[in-house]
Length: 271
Image (cartoon, rainbow, N blue to C red):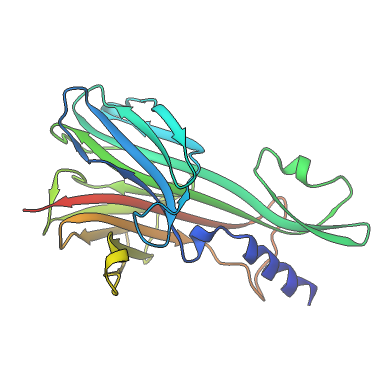
């Protein structure tokens, strides 16, 4: 009974993005042709896709350009419903933008009292008092991705980031039109994820009764082809790991229960 209550409590601590809401990065364009080579990116959490409902915290931004070039964001700002930043693309080619976060959630017993806590790998020692009996621990990793190009997309070849779930492009992911498709490989800690469920949802569901959502499966090499049937922005998501629940391991300090999520946004223009 204690374990069942514990896992239900941990499940309640999971972020909304793991339930009904989606997390996303959305650039104002995926193909930058202005003189300055600057793109603006918004970050938010919402149930109505690409509508600002709650700000997504930009915790660890990683921006990689052609040939492994590392680029820093500019003008980062936070508002109630979204966070945002500008990005100057110094050379032609395709850039990968990732926002990553890790969290630890669980509960402990101390002095006959059970308490829940939330921490990061760096703050766990502070949040877990000395002498406390750890009852369960869940580690979640989240990644939001998008891709932008300056002028011609060029060769698209990125090295895996290697931690948590991520999408690795296997071809062009910008300068796309309705009717095109994109090929992606799903990786978990750098390893291909076969037979994983992939959710694809077009934006604009606030204005229609049907979301237009489709589900696909990765192949034996973790590869999936995403069809872009109509013009607009698309959200592509996947997850790995088991949700805490009855009969599941509680997780320890050395071996927490792990769960990972990834989303990416793409754009298709009219043909």
